[in-house]
Structure formats: C-alpha cells, structure tokens
Length: 115
Length: 110
Image (cartoon, rainbow over all chains, first blue to last red; front, side, top):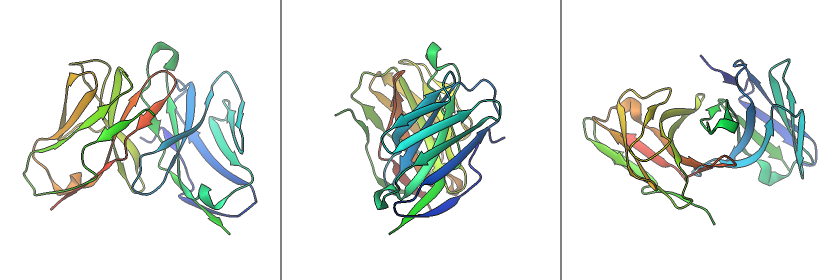
C-alpha cells in the first residue's frame, strides 16, 4: 500500500526552463512534507519542506506547493540547471510536532536537465 | 558539519552469512532509522529507534534486526543474508528540524 506516490518515474527538462515534480498521498494524518534530492552513490539530501498549515514554501529556485484537499504536492525548480539532474523523493510524516520524525517516501522521480 | 557515517560503502556477502551494517551519528540525535532503496520502490523503512535500547519495526522488518546500545550508534543485522536483500541501505538520524542521511551501503548477496 503506497501511501506516497510519485507517478512519473522520469522527467526531462531543458536547462533554464521550469521543472515540476508531483507527489500524491493518501494518508490524511500526514502533516509535514519534504523533498529530498539524491545523486548516485550518495545519501538523500534535504531540499525543502512544508507544513500542512501552509500551502506554499519558497527557498531560492525551489518552491513547494501543497494542496491538502487534493492530497497533492509539487516541487517547482526555476530556472532548472544541469546540477539539478538527480532523483527526487517526496516524503511525508505524521505528528512531527509530537516528535514523530518517521518518514514515508515516494518511489522517486529521475530528473534530467538537458543543456 | 553534521554527519551520519556508514562504515562500508560496498559489501559483498554470501547467502546465509550474518551481516552487520554499522551507522554512527555525531549530532546527538535521539532518533535513528534504517531504510533500503530499491529501483521503483523508493526508500522503505526497515527499523527505527527513538532512544538507546529502544527499537520499533518499520514497514519491512522481516529478515532484519537492529541494535542500539549507544545513542550515537545504530546497527542493522541481517541474520541470514539472502539474495533478495541485495540493495542500497541508508541510515539516517533526525531531530525535529531535519533528517540527515548517510552515504549508503551497497550490499550484494551472492
């Protein structure tokens, strides 16, 4: 039972354009969402997060949007750069304010930026 | 710079062997986790620990056990390695603000 889904296994985007990665979830208890970036042979690194009390969070070129009614979040990268080529994982947790940092991950989307 | 260190980057073990994967963090975090990453399946939680000597099963604990004798160290044990345990294993530790991952151990069971 996949509670966090990333339906696009791969995405190719021209350098300088916008990359949009999508993520859907089914568990209504999730209240904190994160995006991680992973290069081959390295561990995932934290990119950006959003609490369920917000619908948008921005950090430089990265913006995460949350639509709670649709149980959907997206990561926008603008402008896309060659160094953004990596696998991106969406993750969610429930009860983070109460000390529960257990994360449920999606299956990942491989983003390729074309020079 | 905060760190989660996994003792081996690559391991090759034989079927039936007992395998130990070690993880150490220097951030004084209470929470530590073991995940495995497989193509098309993402990261799946094997076991986690919220305190020394405490452990909780994750989503796929079968065939694995863990040990947390000290706060900074969390070990994953494959009691009798099988070929379906060939995978990338990722250790993580967390505070409320962030979860930090190690670089991973690529385990191949032959």
